[in-house]
Amino acid sequence: MITTEQLQQLGITKLTEVWCDVLNNLLPKYDIDTPQRIAAFVAQCSHESANFTTLSENLNYGVTGLARTWPKRFTTAELVNKYARQPEMIANFVYANRLGNGDEASGDGWKYRGRGLIQLTGKENYQHFADSIGKNLDDVPKYLETPSGATEAACWFWKKNKLNSYADVGDIKGMTKIINGGFLGLDERTQKYQHALSVLRLTITD
Image 1: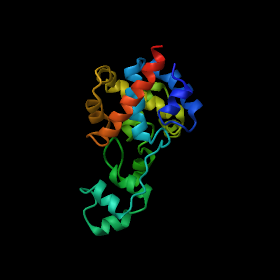
Image 2: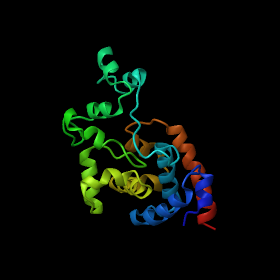
Image 3: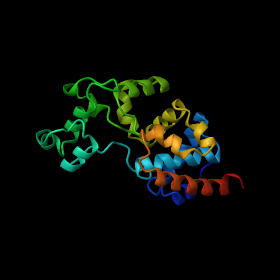
């Protein structure tokens, strides 16, 4: 069992009791059940969600942020200026015609933007997750912005990508590549993992 005291030590200071209950309920169902696996899961989720406080993708990019984040899509000053500080328009543009989404006019990019502790993105992924837990697709966006839904989606992603095998050998770089698509924030993820492992080992093994 994870305790609220442990989560607080790990920087999860908002809704700590709620997160504690949700984690203790869901992690064993996905075999995230050893100090190494729990530490890796909490560390990665903490990095991705700003310590379990951000459950929906922030797409409120300005001019500089758009050009830096999607240089291949925002190729002209006209495009950048048109979309800057327009989160819904940005999502519909950058996520159009991929990840199972329709075109820009469909609104799928915004509807199926990144949500959860490890951001689930795109209609196709939302549908696969919905099928796995027996929910209607239309109910999933709202569910993903709850502690239970945000955690369960992360657990589903974790199991789907066999991340327990990386956690068992402490391969934070390998799992970061799968989660992030690169190695963004690797140092912080590693520090969070090492800290989580020390906190969890001390209590779980006692």
